[in-house]
Length: 512
View (cartoon, one colour):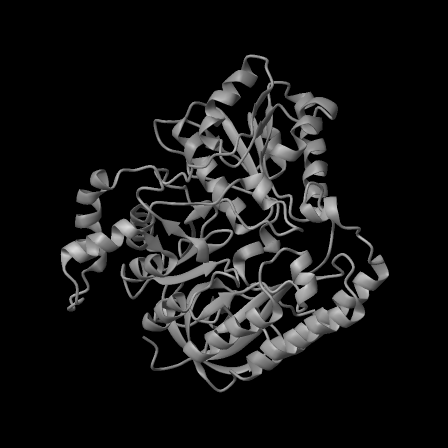
């Protein structure tokens, strides 16, 4: 199938990707690091933080684990197949360790807390287990393993955001970058392990986010994706984040007023009023505006939104800035209110429809994508039909679609029977996929004959005679290579035809 998931939140082509850095002259300690990642964009972003920490300690990277002194695998517990792939990889690393007994093998990330005993003691697959909030401790934990001990740190933190660490950009095209704005999650969706593996929600200090995005722009990056489990609940408050407001005043006043709020226009507020607003905290809408003001040439995306939290303020901010992409990933999971309640999604069918209507009213051109789970505990055929009717109502551009798979440790695993037969789950998923493929094609056909602003990301997957990039609505656009434009630049592309997931066109003579 020519389908359906061009969003970068969970890029299947990157699963198990090994990461490679340029050596830093005069700093290498002679030891080599191999690190590969699974799961969502947050995990790949975390691997960049880990690489930065260990590179600072002198490690070089390698893409061959057989030549590595330290082998790390950054894990995901969201999907069953990801967990099985990780377990299989660990067995391969164990074979390599027979030939290289000094090799340190470690598991990072979301599997660490839940499977630490199995990995360390029962199956003896690893030497070190490190949770998402303990990456600063990695150099010391590796030293403990060097001394002949096993090492574990899976403690979750209420403060750690890694705000002061500038992530090394791994395997980057130098154009797109992920920027983490928060960690953890307070939403206790009954099917999800994230609150247990990544801890409580905490927001990163906004000026460090602006500084990181500014640095990326100055280095030639032209698109940033602001990442969080639930970006709409981003809220930074100096007092609640453990810093005294008085200590923040000079920094907030200079940076926020001079570098962020100053736009060359009359803002209609005094400096004192602006400082008072800062004391009240920075919301996600505020943060979006701060990043958008870095440069009109820096494109901003974000993921993921939650239907209970996305506000009209966010939508109006998106409307106000051309460089905030008109694209929202808004997971629905189910179109039925009873099932949503069992999932503990904290919104109803009517609430979700209200948010869809708000998006259409404020940003009519906005593309919407979603997540759908079929066959959740006790889901009836009528409730499944509610999901299909929701898809008909919204007509999503893209979707992530899964059968329900019980994850150990979740509320659903403890409270509900996984009682939908596998054959029924498969049939319902097939119906969802078929409907989404139809809607995706419909949405893209509506864009044929229009001109789309596209950020060139590189050659297309099929030919080095074509470039590939993304439109404002996050759809893939393919067009011929030509003189006068190259990756990292924006072009206007006239859309001539489309498939179910790709638009195909030619560069307009009126390109910027």
